[in-house]
Length: 96
Length: 247
Image (cartoon, rainbow over all chains, first blue to last red; front, side):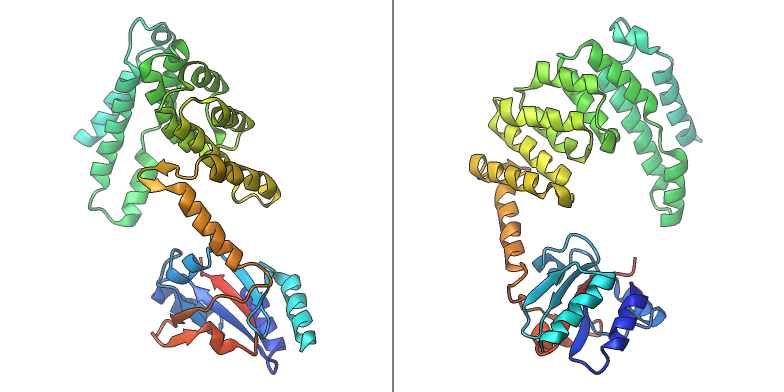
């Protein structure tokens, strides 16, 4: 997970792109995780538990759950991971 | 040392009565006695765990949790010997606590169908069957959902059939068909005081808002340091929204 996300972020460095997390860890664990895994992208902090308010609103039942949104905020892909995630982001980038 | 001797006594109590003699109903503990003895042994362990550190508790639990095998075997035999008896439903209800994905001994489904199909107590039992993955369970639940005379038992059976497959992406169509049936026939299925049909519907509507092609609902939240942030702050960027945790 993390290495792939880091490389995607690096590749999109000068482009209109971000990973935006919604994190369900305890505050302590979250802070350790971002340090240990060199996570540079922002995250909402969802109250320290998997049943947090954002995950509940988004009916998240499994982690990780991923949505890819275009620049207009429209949901374009769901649970696209790994290579498919790269391709999805590239395809959206080409629309710009 | 009391805590050590009690579970041992319990094990002996259960172990000393050969299954065959109990099956004939001539002697030996009854279903409720076996359950009670097991629950007492579990209670003794919980008593011992109280106040200990989490690590110690886990260690104790692993090492000393009373093995239910003998009780399972005895209760299965007793239920099989007298499947129509009032205690057999309690016995099966208890067996389901330990049967997990494997479900019940196949013969017990027949016992339930023959003797308890129209009992209200079957509801608690079919709800517990949601965890079981066997085809026998599915067959049984389907039968209950169609044939039980008790409406809320039929509804609970549909619910369990849905729960068994809710995470299975290949069975989405089956899940949809079941939920249609639930919505149509049991619009107000109450379980433990909760209207489960309504809550499933609400969840589904939330899911539709999150479909591909819909504008993502706004998120207003905070980062870990308490700074406010909004999803719409990132308009103009492609966003990989990642619900994650480091576990």
